[in-house]
Structure formats: C-alpha cells, structure tokens
Image 1 (cartoon, rainbow, N blue to C red):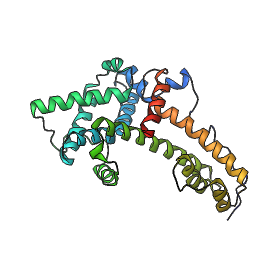
Image 2: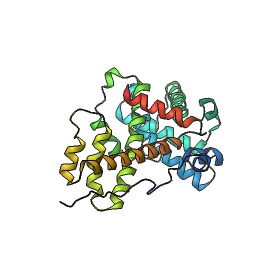
Image 3: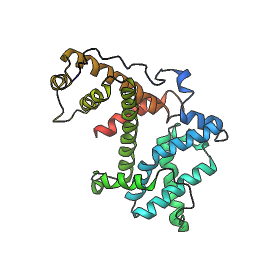
Image 4: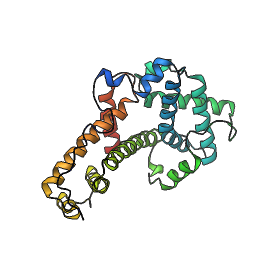
Length: 257
C-alpha cells in the first residue's frame, strides 16, 4: 500500500467557503428571496432547497398519521404549491429561516387539506425526489418514530440531511484530489462521529501506511474543511447572515438531543 505521509491540504479546494456578506449574497435562500422566484437562478435555487427538505417534511406528514402514499401525495402537493405561488413574504415572521418557514407553511397546508379533504392526485405535481429514493430512505430509517413528535422527526431529518450534504461534498473533494485521498477520507470521517468503536488515529495510520502525526494533521484539515462546508450549507437556508450562528447551534443541539 502506498505511503500517504504527505497529505495535500484540502482547505479552500472545490468550493466557496469564505465568510462574510460577499459569500452570503450568493446563497440559495437569499437568491430566492431577492428574485421572488422570477429568475432562472431563483427557480433553480428553490428547487434545490425543496429537494433538500423533501425527506424532513415527508417525515413530519407521516408522523401526523398519514399513510406512505397519502404522505407522498401531500408532500408533493405542498412543494408544487410552493413552486407555483412563490409567496415568501412570510419568511420575515420566521426570522428568514427556511427551516421554520417551511414547517409553518406545511402545517397550514395540512390544516387546509384536512378541512377541505384535499387529495392531490398522484402524478399531477412534479416529483422533486425520485419515489424509489424516498421509499429506500424510509425503509432504512431507524428513528424510534413512536417516541418522537412530528416536529422532532422534522428537525432530526433536517439536521441529518444537512450532514449528508456536507459529507458528500467533502468526499467529492477528497476523491477529486486523488492519490489515495478517497480511502483516507472514508477512514477519517469515522472520527467525526464521537461513537464507540470508531478507529483510533493510530489504527488509521497503520492501515494507511502513514505516520500517526500525518493522520493527526490530515484529520485536523478534514475537520476544518467540514466546519466550513457545514457553515456554508446552513447559510444557504437563512435570509440574513446573523441567523447562521443560531442555526448552527440549533443543528448541533438537534443532533445531540
């Protein structure tokens, strides 16, 4: 196995992880709010955000007592209405945070659906996430749903989805850098989760034919880049820079609860 004692730094590779207003003005949610959905860029940003929130919102609907097919229809109908109306003025009441805005909007949508016995016909609205992907995630879902409220399921799935996106971006950067970095990433990412049974840095060093100090430095760089990407992903879902830190703290609290 090749020696990877000199691991190239990934900080700054493959993305815009800078802080400050210049970086923030290009986030998905701010594009949607500024353009009110009229531009192609705003439409693309909105669809990306809808795809991100499909699984958390679907989980909320399921916990509210709807069966899988009806929950799929309602979630799909909610997003179809959102894309059609592009009514985002109420986000100001939710402090400009997409997480809060979407949950409030979904609650209103479900209340109207119950009152009017609304049924969204299957196939009428555009599915933003392939149905097979949605069902696969539900089958693999190990959340103890019987002990979690609908809001708690939504919050947890929101945090897990953000985490998945960050790790996917980070993995892509390592794979693009080559020189065995993909394998190193798969081992180092296990250290990000503070769970029993994770390998030690010494074990990773032995398995990768690296010095323990090189692994320590590589993990430091990975953790630093991970934090930058996480902050960037969260910034995409708030309207003003001041909300990023609050959402980051909320993200951590949700995962630790």
